[in-house]
Length: 363
Image 1 (cartoon, one colour):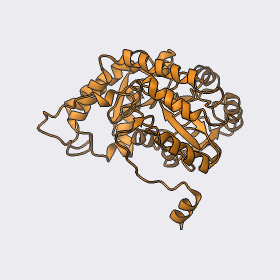
Image 2 (cartoon, helix red, strand yellow; image 1 turned 180 degrees about the vertical axis):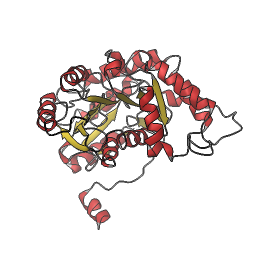
Image 3 (cartoon, helix red, strand yellow; image 1 turned 90 degrees about the horizontal axis):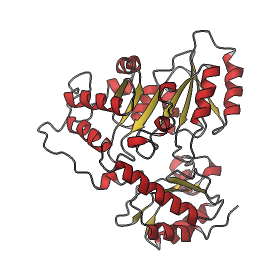
């Protein structure tokens, strides 16, 4: 019944593969995955167990030490994916009696994480600090004095392409005494010196309780890490079930993560990506996208499924493959096309994309 209902509504999910098409879809913003050569010289290809059993290695420890140093934090802990990291963090760090406030547009992995915790969770309007402040003040008076308040946001939102008001969030945290957690899955690599993300670019590292970063997007590989204090990592090692009970990444993967982060021409790739984003911004009609001008993610909201299908056909006619973002991944009012720009997209490719998109009427 549920599958039939989804097919009838036009939002049935299917696996697709379009080799040879122009990529305006993937999260490989800097094109690192296309040129990396993976190390296959390891005799032991598997980790053989969880990190707490047989899966720990010097490769893992060296990698985490490097990550902590690179991102200027006290400690880091690697998880197998960004989804796994968010589940692992939010399911165990906020405790019974604590409260989590989260941006309504935050990634589903965060929501799934706190649903497994015993803390209460409340959304606030997207990037609306007045709404956040109002809700914290209203609820905090009812909390026990030992309770902690957490606020969870993305620095660069994956489904809207806009940027969180991080400086204002940090200022507000000082007056309302909450712990700020920032998911930087889509901003590391793209922003900050050496790809250290928006929190670092804004000089806010010491003011953030924890960051979740991934290596499967701009860094072009796989895996993720939680960044924060040594005490936080020790806590996760002891209480984060997705970390405790998951087979660790193979040793070679930890080495590959390090090599991806230190890509020699990362800064030039960042610059080239921003040039392509700027080119897109000059070619697209005003008002068609609401994403941040610096963002490689451009979301076009389109109400009609028929209009989405027609636009996809027009894009495929010029060899451009983009997948729609539909309900329930996003609310019905936010359905449309999610375009990801990359450093390797040519100006002609972007111009062709914008030419098709320009046929849309601006609301």
